[in-house]
Length: 501
Ligand SMILES: Cc1cc2nc3c(=O)[nH]c(=O)nc-3n(C[C@H](O)[C@H](O)[C@H](O)COP(=O)(O)OP(=O)(O)OC[C@H]3O[C@@H](n4cnc5c(N)ncnc54)[C@H](O)[C@@H]3O)c2cc1C
Image (cartoon, rainbow, N blue to C red; front, side, top):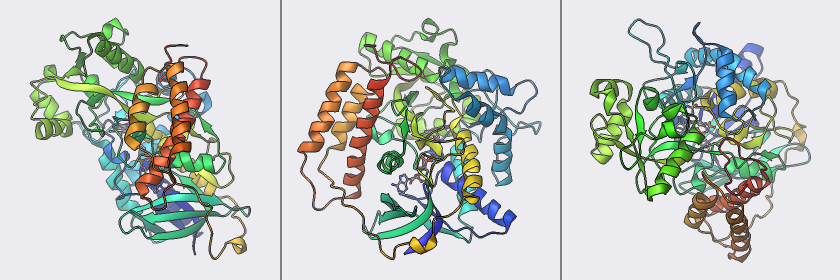
């Protein structure tokens, strides 16, 4: 069996940054460390690749760390872990330096200084970006660097379908090739879950279809604690369409001056919050939801026409082209139809200040982890930052940790049977969007818990099943844990709003 010091599930910003940091430590300390990196799809099929706005870091004299800390706490409803917020915000310039050292090309102004922009919830312009496609630039920079490393084994198009940990502390991972279905088992001293979010649980999401929450499922199965799983952020401005995967219209466009208008064309955000269109995402999403409810509208509009064609084409070229190519919509002249859409998991696997879960040898970084940075709502552009920061902390701890005894590695590992049943993914997505989204109700959530429990016990066990069946089974359990967490919440805070509380 192939054995690695570290197995990383996920090739987004979290997983790839970790690979790079481990490699740097290996060179610096002169000690070999073997790493396997596994991705369900192509290496760049990640949410990272789709991030638009950018990454927050204070570097200008007119801004301050305290202001970034305050903004993060305000967005998070002051339920964030303040120590973590301070550590991450204070280290953000270092994160930017590391990304630049690895080759990241952040936009500059004509005068040659870095072009920092403002986003919703931020008091100052502190978002480092690459046009409106920052994630794609980060993804290609990290992929290019990480895939040249000699001591790294790459498993692209391989889904981890099961993880077990033996008493010796050794982990066993079952991998299934997504095209030819071939199976293989690898073992590792340390496992890092960097599998991203849970967008696939909802009927409309900005996430990649690979975001079926597998990290969350494996962590819980291995005995790790989950925290605040119900803190699911909806992005106020998903481009309205009939597809499940929804194209995101970045907040930066509102930062640049675009405004939200209801069906009647009225700019309504001032009625809900004095920060108007630049209020935090939860407030904007609920305001849009309320406006839509008043008239039964399926969407509202984002008016960017005041920005002018030149500014739109220069600053938002990707969105401009996307709307032209896919909807024949010139956003410099016409309003953009938008709707709040599932976007980001603020809660997740509970981890320490170095990304370690409650299980020895098991780490979680990136979107699947709950580090305490976001509290009850993530501030825009803080998640890419969090992923790199925790990758660095985890790398250092993993590099210096003791391995389980190598002689206890099994030649072959027999995985426990996990029955896979026939379940409808679409039914789950529809119900999650109705009952576990922007505005929740206790009675509806209880009904949904009953529905999941009954469906799970009534559905027939499959003798032959696909990877999609495995994912869907995981998703039903994640939904159940999410609803149970939502029912345990005693107050409305950040993204969690239960109208019956
Ligand atoms: C449209 C969009 C725009 C965004 N814009 C911003 C922004 O401007 N700024 C910001 O800070 N954040 C932004 N975010 C959020 C941010 O992009 C994500 O939170 C972040 O990229 C997550 O990185 P990650 O490494 O945790 O996961 P991802 O980048 O999602 O990567 C997940 C990886 O896990 C792998 N994986 C999952 N399950 C398995 C499995 N079972 N087996 C093997 N591999 C598996 C996948 O194949 C993939 O490689 C945005 C998100 C979206 C969707």
